[in-house]
Length: 281
Image 1 (cartoon, rainbow, N blue to C red):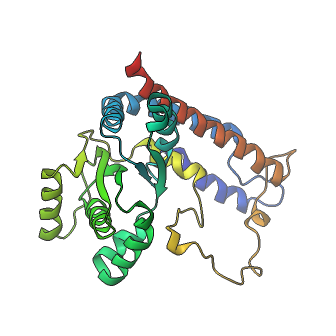
Image 2: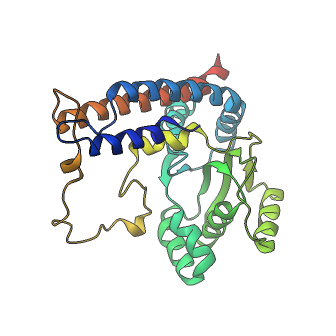
């Protein structure tokens, strides 16, 4: 689900910035509330579509009892907490651990630097050696990420399975990769890749996760890119150019926006949890 108001807001911000001292150039809180309401409404529609898949995955986890369920950042992260709560309640001490992982480096190295790919795979997955792991993704397009994860897991001695909650109905065309396609077909035949046939390209979770998962410059980073650039002290704080609404300081505005953002995230997680619980009812 997209948030089309953001593009309009960017134009408003630019106009306000040019409008002189004293005119706010940040998103009005009332507009954020409208976006939040639209996000909830869209999420409820999409959750209704994917509810059978979410519930089927929960049953599979209960049945097969993996050691861990790993939700891929950023798009799938918001499902982690609801699943953890649901599985803890339904499985007790047998519930798997829930982790999050950013596979950007892994995918890049898989196709550019095989030596570095194996190195990253063994470093990242060493703690899971000998364990059964479910990797949960938001959307499946061509399978590059799935193949990279499964090959990395094999290199580290992990019994891994990849599950995508939706399938991109119109993935961006790429150069033909017969090797990748053969591997995808083989892994699907072996039961290591499962793709639920929900035709959604941009699930609400992608937008929602960006609301609260920002490690650096708006992106989640893998463990190999956590170091931020040095010597940033000479760069002005972004707030220097922000003009808050009348009657508020920029600190007060940011605090209130953060409160409303986390409230929205909590509401979305509650709706995912309710979707998992619906089958119990």
